[in-house]
Image 1 (cartoon, protein in one colour):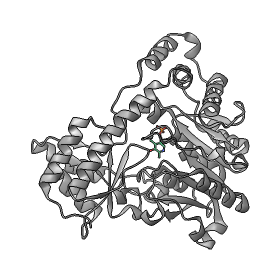
Image 2 (tube, protein in one colour):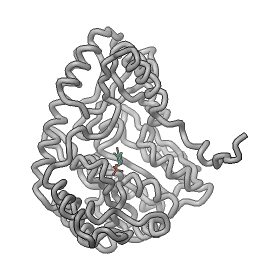
Image 3 (cartoon, protein in one colour):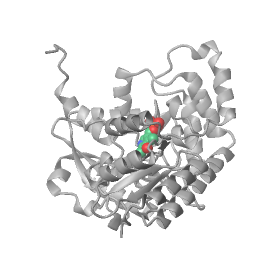
Image 4 (cartoon, protein in one colour):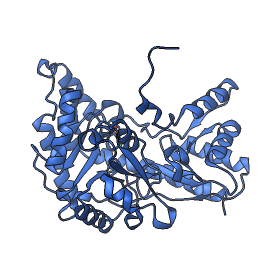
Length: 393
Ligand SMILES: *Cc1c(COP(=O)(O)O)cnc(C)c1O
């Protein structure tokens, strides 16, 4: 037996979502199949060139070669605050109400370490982005899953959270526009969530990674636009999806100064911040021309329409998302998420993500990401129609 026994906390994490899919994909590739991968939530388009140029210039400057400050260049936090005010009409103090992150995933994963003791509960949407659960477990906390149901528009139903979980809860995570369902929330709903958390002394964490990826003229709101939200809430933002910068690792959290200071204390102990040249490029992204964002949205919108129309014509029940780059598809009756995922892959060479990979309440759905060009999405639709799967209704 190996002397390097893994710590127990790792066995409490769910299995790696893509392991089984990877295996099936390798099989299909070996059989010479042409794979259409709609599984990955990673933009296929490049980072806009003006942002890349700014990185190139900043990278040769020796002042950027040393350790950055852990909380981020003040100039980056000022750019984030100015962007926030322009976009959402919310004013932030750059020095205390903005914290630079090595991608928002990092800040989400680390937050429970600052506020959760063993036995404390963190309220986590299901299906949901897996990091809310992972961060909770790694901090010794207990995730309690809140179902996102079609009947309530995939909004967390705050009134049905079990009272014993609420009594032990420290943090509530929300995420709109939502991964994986593509659902959106109104400012009225956010106001309800803020009031709920203020009454109970809960930390409210809103993940707004997809706030800029929206269609048909829709503009997703910021939770911090709710009066009094800053008393209990922080909001996560990322340059990853907005500017096609997933590989760069830069994002930020904004809102309640005390919560951000707690997260910052964890970060001073385990990381040393974001490469300053990348922060300079981030300033360029946030303060430079924004027409690239509208262009990206137009591309996703065309892909969305082709996929949704095609799936509807094939008899599927499917949501037409107003935002995010995900399409949430109901699996045919009598079939599981895993069954449909496997059939799509082995018979049509199409990779989608089984909904239950995002939590038990994702069973009965699969997620398609709009991160391939429209010709490939047309080809995927063509193959799906040939499969003649039984309609969902
Ligand atoms: C992609 C994603 C993120 C994080 O992205 P980073 O690259 O770490 O900034 C956060 N939340 C959700 C829901 C996402 O899908």
